[in-house]
Structures are given as C-alpha cells and as structure tokens.
Length: 80
Image (cartoon, rainbow, N blue to C red; front, side):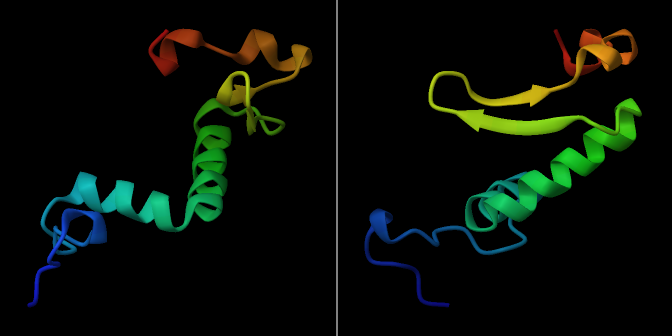
C-alpha cells in the first residue's frame, strides 16, 4: 500500500484498522444514509415512531419528538 504524502490527503488509516474509526469514516462519507440509519435505530430503541433527527445552524443536530410521545421518552437512555 502507498500511504499519502501529506496528512491533508487523508487515507492514513487502512479500513479495518479500528472499528470505531471505520464507523466515523463511513459517517463522513455517507452522512445522509448514516443519519437515516441512526434515526431508524433510535425509533426502534425508543418505540417512538415519529422520532426525527434534524439539523439547524443554531443547535446543530438534535433529536425531535412530539409532545404526544413525551411520556415515552426517557432522557437517561440518551445519557442526560
């Protein structure tokens, strides 16, 4: 394998070197698909079918649930 000449070129770590790093690299390349998968996982985990993962310039990414589903939401499950 030929490593890149500069750090700016990326590709310093070969796929499979670190599973967590592979997940982050995949998320950076396939962001929309990764977010859709994360949204599906969180819907499954919480049982809230209307759960959405959204983005805005003020808050960044956030999880949105309706007031009707607020009683089903457990903030401690998300580490809060």
